[in-house]
Amino acid sequence: MSTFSLDPGADQLAVRDWLHGFAAEVMRPAAAEWDEREETPWPVIQEAAKLGIYSLDFYAQQFFDPSGVGIPIAMEELFWGDAGIGLSIVGTTLAAVAVLANGTEEQIGTWAPQMFGTPDDVKVAAFCSSEPDAGSDVSALRTKAVYDGAKDEWVLNGTKTWATNGGIAAVHVVVATVDPALGARGQASFVVPPGTPGLSQGQKFKKHGIRASHTAEVVLDDVRLPGHCLLGGKEKLDERLARAREGAARGGRGNAAMATFEASRPAVGAQAIGIARAAYEVALDYARTRVQFGRPIIDNQGVAFQLADMRTRIDASRLLVWRASWMAANNRPFTAAEGSMSKLHAGETAKWVTAQAMQILGGNGFTREYPVERMHRDSAIYSIFEGTSEIQRLVIARAISGMPIR
Ligand SMILES: Cc1cc2nc3c(=O)[nH]c(=O)nc-3n(C[C@H](O)[C@H](O)[C@H](O)COP(=O)(O)OP(=O)(O)OC[C@H]3O[C@@H](n4cnc5c(N)ncnc54)[C@H](O)[C@@H]3O)c2cc1C
Image (cartoon, rainbow, N blue to C red):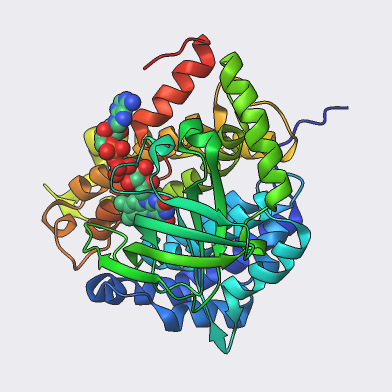
């Protein structure tokens, strides 16, 4: 009997249909307005919270789905609805995953619910790692965390940039360096509780796409945090630092962070697939109905073949995303950086498919009367954040070659 299956199963299909309804009925009609306003769509997040789509329970359930495809299916549907609003809804999960991955049970229980708030009082959370001089090179972080043993407090100073929900979040998770000499292995993650003095929002960025998602600098000026805000606790950090120092002396390399990235990148790839599928569907409909030279434009092989390639690349991306998600859920080693592969392919596909869709819509594709123009702008971030396409290629190249490719 064969056990191989690409059937997501009844539960996941029910979730997909439920989210599709929300995406079609609530997100799509609101998409153009929030893109123009360039503001966080709080009423839409609240609506999602009331339905249980914006909640810790919902994401935890998808996160722990043994097939692995719960999260990619949810991401694809929400981002099919709209990417800017989608990121406003799921941006919190970046911070939540950092707490789930690094926090103690007590920390998870304390902070994760506060990140989402309640349906009557919704909150968002932010994950702050990137800095002006540390984007692709995460080992170069300068934000410093110093331990004040007398008070059992950590003191954080530095400037974070590009933080999704930065400054408007209830809870911020901040990655800081404790021992800069150890690079990425000398870093630790801290929870900054709501209302902590010293944390403020810097510049809010005006962006090319995903404009309904808030992106800003976060300034940390002598932010004092109780000891229990260090994710994982001090004992574990001290052990980890000691191991890293020993590893550094032997020239060893830590790979825990890499494994986490491989597991989270497929979710970002799934967001890109949602955008690509949305643009492809608009283009397919348009090509069937737009008449030139006395026949629908899809009657021309030149147009029909473009659509065939769009669909093929979208489906190939989904298979890569599902494979990597399944591998993560089943603890398979990412020997060829399959997580990075899925994000690379899906991100580049979204950019390419949305550009093709604009072409198929002709002049209409270039206007804000039709959604593909927005989808094209939104897709552009997928070769930049969560590791640029070049960084994904670097990770894949190192994994397949075993060489320290630079
Ligand atoms: C809208 C948005 C939201 C974001 N949200 C968050 C968030 O919530 N939290 C967070 O911490 N960060 C976030 N980021 C930051 C994002 O992850 C970084 O922008 C990204 O990692 C790239 O860093 P950088 O912008 O400094 O580019 P750089 O690292 O300066 O890269 C510039 C160019 O050089 C290339 N390059 C760099 N190094 C190499 C190399 N070794 N080989 C080949 N090419 C290379 C890059 O691929 C890129 O094309 C967000 C960014 C944006 C734009």
